Image 1 (cartoon, rainbow, N blue to C red):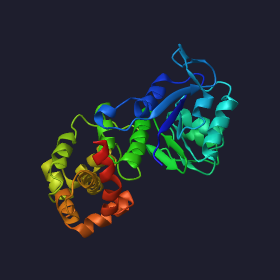
Image 2 (image 1 turned 30 degrees about the vertical axis):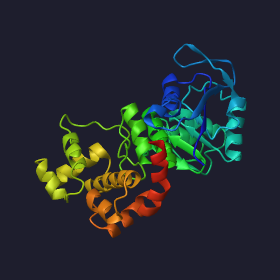
Image 3 (image 1 turned 180 degrees about the horizontal axis):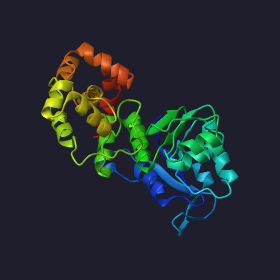
Image 4 (image 1 turned 30 degrees about the horizontal axis):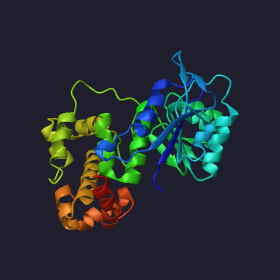
Length: 320
């Protein structure tokens, strides 16, 4: 079932920016862009919540307003003497009834305190990853990903990764085009990953003054063409080894993997918005043949192009 009701928990000493990230993902009304609306509430154990920024928030909804939420989000907060037991119970109950919980940045520590990270893959901001693993040794902490979805427990890395996770959930429920509309409104790329698993080389990349962004923009308009490591390196006036190293530093992946991902995104948009035959979609998106498109599409998306079209095209036609 698609997510419809979202509760964002304001813990004591909540980080206002991370709370805002969660609200930006699900609380902003974008129905004028054809984006389905979410019933989103900020909830708290007390009427007034002290933030980490030194001011207090007045919260209209108590924790009982999250009792029927499809998704309960825990933004980062500053831990003092532990977390309110009522909030930990809410998180446990949410998972027990089959709904999802998610964290932004160090909000993962709250999920850990509730016992929800034990035996699960998870992540948090890279600066806190070692501490999270030490405090909750049964959790499998991966510091090299933007977000992790392990069953009903979802965790994201730094602040911006909370938006990556939100876009992932929106995409899973409503398709690529809706996710792109949300990303466009937020002014961020619809994908900020290096592949299907969202792996990145290092948490923060320090890029040279020169950037490959102009080349990447050109390639987005040339996905139907054939590209090789040698041809791309020549366009950038670099050796293949230097180009490959620079490309991974800026995108977190290889040129081949990046092109495949972008071609998949183009194919998804074509499947959602048109009736072109699969072979035509394959040719225009750069896969050449329908068989090659089916192979890569099933590997990355998890379903065939025909199944994806049946699932999302009618939904997009209604939403658009």
